[in-house]
Amino acid sequence: MRLFRFMTQAALSLAAAGALALAPQEQGAKPPSAIPSGFHFEGSWNCAGAFRNGKPHRSSMTGSIVVGDKWLELMEQDIEPATGYVAKYLIGYDAQQKQLVEFDANNFSAATYSSAEGWKSDVLTLTSPISSDSKAPYAANRFVFSIVNPDTFTMDWQVSKSAQFNWIPADHLVCKRSTQS
Image (cartoon, rainbow, N blue to C red):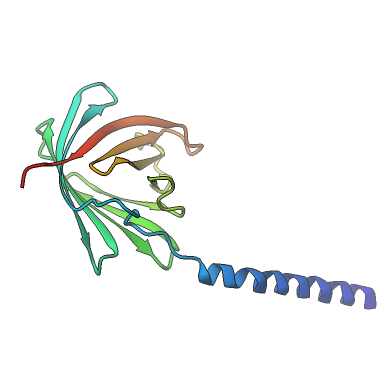
């Protein structure tokens, strides 16, 4: 019984020491930022690309830094196809979830996405929760933003038909900074 008590106390002490050793790193870790270092989304963008079926997709986008310079706001309006699609993407840090979140509000629907990693090598991947609706056209979807150069970024929408994440391209846009005032 003494040996059991000793081993239990030793295990608890080691677990506590491990937790204390990790605590300073977690407290000192900087949360991921919605705004990538050295890139400016502010301004107007002309976007062109294609849907998975090869049909052209063109839109205009406007970027702003909002809410105390902590959130990235992107407004998209489709030009082709002329469906009238309008969206607002709001990307920022959720301290409770300890990850970046995206709110996608558009005139057809709405969705949420998240990323625990944030921007890595000029790429931000935001993934939706897995759908529990067996009739949904896909189990999950994601947006991948990639910075190409100071005046160009790409935005890819991908879907997975299964919860095991086999990503299929759905929409690809190349967005170039507008030179018009």
